[in-house]
Amino acid sequence: MLDYSIWIEKIGVIQWFAFGTALLVALAIIGIGVGYIANPMAATRSFGLPLPESGVNIIWWLRLKGVRDIVSGLIVLAFVAWGSPRGVGLIMLIEALIPIGDMLLILAAGGSTKSAFGIHGITALLMVSAGIPMMIGAH
Image (cartoon, rainbow, N blue to C red; front, side, top):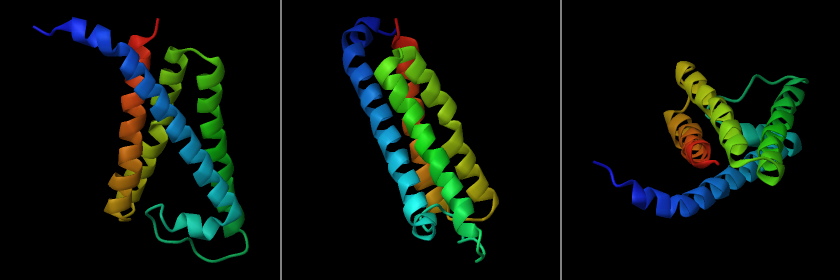
């Protein structure tokens, strides 16, 4: 049988880890979004798919991704600042679908497995690892 007293004693540490992870992920995705707005072609190189075809509008399509990344990070930051732990956890679990979807699309397109698992897969794992303790440890 599991000893839940250890879990109860460490819930504070786990909650701090979860909040710290949420903050780190939020700031990282905001930074990535800024990169997509400032220099879209350079930011795209690490995503895991071949660079898009050249064309006048490609840069603007990539910048759209940057705006969405920034907003995704700001949503997490807003819930960390003004929401409840359960709200932050829920947002983290929902937003974990983004890197999961990115990973699956990169793999389906025959893109870089290193980027698919090493960037997007690990990001999703971190987000879920932060979201679950916030959901179950929330009061």
